Length: 273
Ligand SMILES: [Zn+2]
Image 1: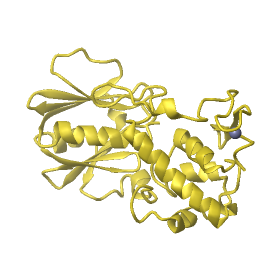
Image 2: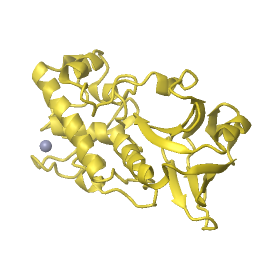
Image 3: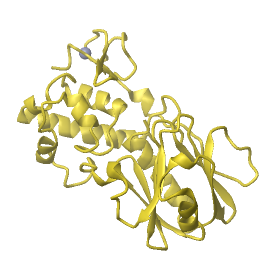
């Protein structure tokens, strides 16, 4: 959290809000947020740069600049990027502020500070192993059911495999639970035990859940808000996530909550086989 749909929503918003604007000043209040290079070089590479485009890989935002550098942001568990007027009240846990021209502020706010930011040579991610080793993008055309089968060649549980960013980029705890429920697959199954028919169902479910969540501007279950501070609405469509004990919408049996790989997992033992 935030996962692919929330990061993609933020990316689309920011494209309309700040592409073409110049970064005039960079203030980092929490140096350990900057993973590469050191804080001083990070700021000097950003200051004066014009933001020319914004891309995304998995849960990473990639800001194209008018220089041979790229600004990378990962929001961790609780990070947000908020666009605000100069002189507006600063929220608690503001760890980085970029001053833009025309005068506005882009604030990085993160209560739990698992986020990360860096400026790297454009397209060169060697210094950021989490980004360099990402698996395929699940919404790209080339992500076929066959590509999913290759990604899931492991005896790990299917829930854990879906959340492994090196296998598939962008899926976290919320969407893994929702995807597996809609595919009718028990999250405890070994990933390499799925039949061709189950892989087809899972593939369809991954794409439809992520697409619908983007359409509803993501899920806001704890801290996630968009660049203007507004929550998403896909949490209203969650069928199992954080619904342990409630009746399943398909069969009426209580939704169960268990742990898989240390993460809370919500599923219906009757509908998911
Ligand atoms: Zn059920």
